[in-house]
Amino acid sequence: MSDDNQVVKDYQRDGVVRLRNFFSPEQVAEIRTELDRYIREDLPSKPADARTLESDGKTVRNLWRLNLHSDYFQKLGQREEITSLMAKLVNGEPVLSGVETFSKPARIGSGVPYHQDNAYFCQSPPDMLTLWVAIDPVTVENGAVYFIKGSHNTNMLPTKPSGVTGNSIGLAEKPTTPKEEQFCATLSPGDATIHHCETIHHSDPNQTDQPRLGLLFVYRGSHTITNDELKTAYTEAVTATPPA
Ligand SMILES: O=C(O)CCC(=O)C(=O)O
View 1 (cartoon, protein in one colour):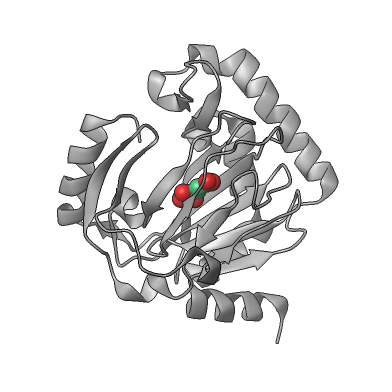
View 2 (cartoon, rainbow, N blue to C red; view 1 turned 180 degrees about the horizontal axis):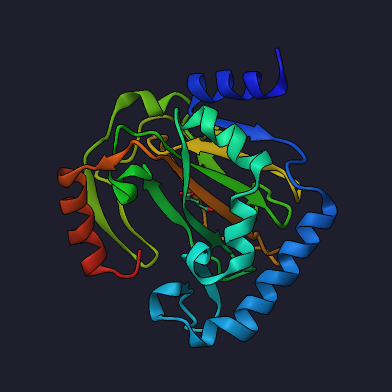
């Protein structure tokens, strides 16, 4: 079985898969340099919904819409070696619909409530996913993402507005799967995970001195369409706690 076929098999079964050395150390270094440059030189002139800040009002929690705001990240997300794998996972022509960061800075990085991404993406069929690439080491202590394997098979669960800036909608009920039984995605720089848009996941605040920067690429199959019911719930939540 080729590597890609194994990834497809694991992804379909579990709704999440970890890929070691997805980007080389050189690519990771280049991405970090470009993110730093973007924040310093470009972000100040971008609209408010290009980022979410942490509670200190100055540290970046998330960069949003980098595919629209940056040629570099748009091109990176469209590289053939990436999109050829994405095509197999979204069951069709992959459309790059987002590039963003979950930066989780040292000491101040906030948590992410239990959620399914399709509460934000609102797509039917749910042929949509996130490729999450570690730029920093990701450890249990600095806020690794926890996934509930197989939860992409449970359809969409009831949601409620979370009141969390940057993650406005979450699950109405905390899942019963204990944390010890969840998949904790510890990663080295350059490693990645791919998760289905209905896989339940969450992450804790970062109370360590080690930052935990992740760069995310979101893809959907070109055949997906907006689900009005999901969109209504999302609009209510994001209106209460913009921008995402
Ligand atoms: O990076 C994190 O802590 C959470 C990421 C997340 O929620 C997502 O990829 O949808």
